[in-house]
Length: 308
Ligand code: SF4
Ligand code: ZN
Ligand code: ZN
Image 1 (tube, rainbow, N blue to C red):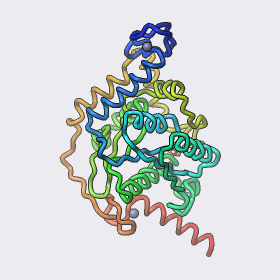
Image 2 (image 1 turned 45 degrees about the horizontal axis):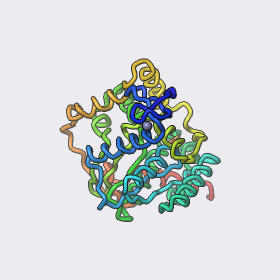
Image 3 (image 1 turned 180 degrees about the vertical axis):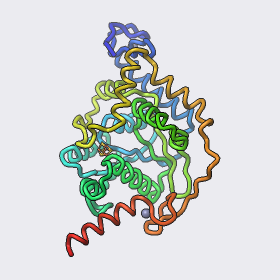
Image 4 (image 1 turned 45 degrees about the vertical axis):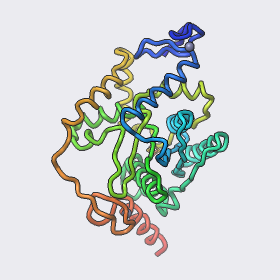
């Protein structure tokens, strides 16, 4: 997104050129446009209202901090939850930045340590289970976020997934034609049993717009990446979509918006049975233990074997 000289609206100095809309904007109009896109996404998908208790998943990255900032600017009140993944320097910095952000903005942030919840480190489990770190980390994060929101009476859990995340995931799911995964990819997942409602208000905002928004609003975020982020399949999808977007601006938005229009075609007749986990009582699709408790038990067994 190259800088343009004049803002289309006020003719002042340009801050950004949104190629997908062929729209040069000054800082002020870029900020207000970004916030109004988020507001209209919230309205369109009936994500939440001012009566709801909101919880933002705060990683310390640009997306979650921008989301929290925007939500509050739009007049909503939201608490944050940061999960300390204990993945070395990356996690240390992520926690520090999240705490600093909440302090300066006077927002309320909860912090949960993954080691305390799981009884071990993600990296330990990766070694014993030969699992991909991101799949394991994803399960652990989703579980902790949902459980915390449910047990503390929050109505809606907000995550900072952006246009690039969502289009990369959609492309990945379509390449394997997994009907259920494709269908579940939506900016709103309703509450069900002990699963709280989940929403993604940034689905129509790109990574580059979020970077520019953080710059314009002076939001400090974590700039180093997780040691496990290299080699992830989703990064390949992001790269492919970036190439398409460079060549054909607005590809990502059209891809995602077009999918939402025909998403019902992917609805499955298969009923999904929900159970309560025998150990933690949270909602799960397996008859005995949820995946989180299975992971926790394997870590427990490993630790017991070590002390034997
Ligand atoms: Fe977790 Fe993978 Fe993200 Fe690292 S890159 S924080 S392991 S999901
Ligand atoms: Zn302007
Ligand atoms: Zn469980």
